[in-house]
Image (cartoon, rainbow, N blue to C red; front, side, top):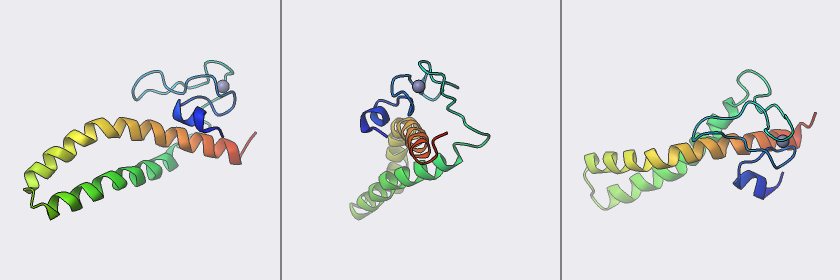
Length: 109
Ligand SMILES: [Zn+2]
């Protein structure tokens, strides 16, 4: 598992082919070596857990800081909505990449 391949969201096997072909759309196989990214049905369920962890790391401090500063709840909701529009796609991609690389590193076939 190379950090460069995770950051650039490349295939865990060859570290060359791109995992994603759009903001939220994944390639089914590696464009370079043909490695199958969706290894079984429901394969990315664990990445949802990882994504929720990262999202909580952003949302919880934001809420705590803003409530400490007496920011009205509607403003907190608007700010969190705006933050979420940006970070959710990033977290989605990162969590899937991390899960695929971790699983490939621990269960090579
Ligand atoms: Zn590959």
